[in-house]
Length: 180
View (cartoon, rainbow, N blue to C red):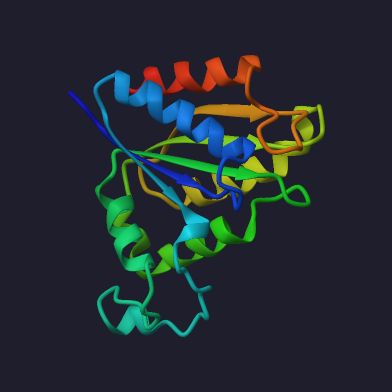
């Protein structure tokens, strides 16, 4: 049975290291027979949540009219969600954080998801990515029935494309291939 896989690439750089790993994950997931869509968050218009709670009074409709309503519906419809971000000061980047915060409009409808996480950083140690992963896991903790399925640690990469020809590329592909 194929699954709907939604990859949310938080990388602000098209072809950046975490974005490249998203492509490898997608390649594997497609080869496994899944329906895969990758959204480059930085290419979408997503305003930040202003905590107006218009969504509470309007049945989940946000006061902001941007690309988020369409993305949120895709998150609700997905079986698998991949969250990917480069490490920014030991956290996720602003683009992905804005998207996560904006799920508040219909967050209770995002449920029973398999989560995969991809993080990249210049530091060579995985410990530099733990706070970033805590952000991903914090969101998943709010998703009813969420299951963490895997983590890709892209360490020691700073310059765009440095991740190519590293063992992490194969790991991302194989993790995508394991989605069944």
